[in-house]
Length: 460
Image 1 (cartoon, rainbow, N blue to C red):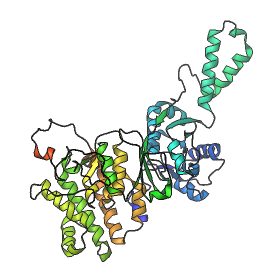
Image 2 (cartoon, helix red, strand yellow; image 1 turned 180 degrees about the vertical axis):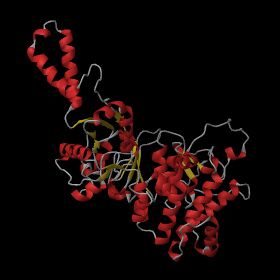
Image 3 (cartoon, rainbow, N blue to C red; image 1 turned 90 degrees about the vertical axis):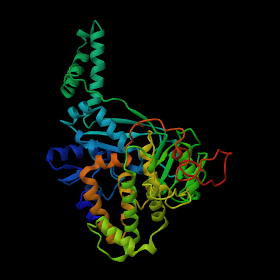
Image 4 (tube, rainbow, N blue to C red; image 1 turned 180 degrees about the horizontal axis):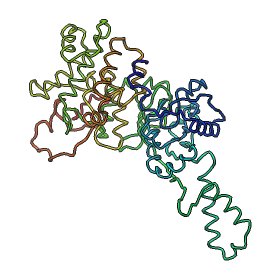
């Protein structure tokens, strides 16, 4: 992992905490939330205020996330909104925290100028020892205040001011006036500078959780509620969904994604260079096949990768041959390939369509197509770090060098090139053969449910 840390590919973009004042504020918030303190004078924090150094010191990587649910957070600065979230247990946690910071940025900027803000992402579940408990998570809300209770005091002061203004006899109420003066000393003039954080709630029908080996839950779609387990679904028991799948159910997963219009073929997507994306996927697959040869792949060029492909042609997996055939078709140099959901290349050929859950679907596709290390790193860092530990030194070196050279220099550009969605320039022609057929074969009318159906993104 040191190679990733040195290149900023792990623990990158964290916020450095080194001033005595900020360390003391952090300790006050930490004691407020957990009853613990750190003896460190220099550490880094993520968007939630979690510090890997403090986690090591306390021998508790979940010191701000007990039981892996209801994540607590410590804000020392609004700059934390751009930091990553470490030890992710739920896919929605970082986006919720970032939205909370952005929508309360002015207030949080003022509050963190004098104190730390401590809070929690709350739901009705406090333990997920039983997988069924995950399905009780439907709404998350945020509670937050400074360690001194400034927001609570400001709300109380505002109520007393309203009472003072409305009651004709309030001028003679010495107790009320004294209480107002005491609160104002702590909050400042709330009539000119209101101290109020928005009460925010977030509905969560579709999400990923790291619990139980990884589980994707989809409840807010048109078609049946579905859970997709990364591991063996039989170990989860009966769950309150109409369809429980795992990664061995490739055909059913493909049908689920297609029936809900969650994916689109890369070669059909608008606004991207499908050929370039397919070539890069092919390079990653070649490196994976050749990783045990002992060859130093650091800084390997495409010419070097092609030489590897020739040298190890017999070892190249079906994913390579399927994507190569698709590339030939996309560049009008070959016939249409027949790639169904049974084919190992199938999920490599897809990306999320343009819909609110596209990040979640790209996360799922990244796990279903793990040899595409760039997508795995961008869309599912937890899975990337787990996979990285099992790679050969040659593959680790190549991947770290590639991501450092090709991705970190322009993260936004790379994401847009891979996953961006342009508005269609024109409606497709009704007689367009590709629109009616596509490289996965002709679309046939549905004849009702099919047991273990084989699906392509155009049907089939």
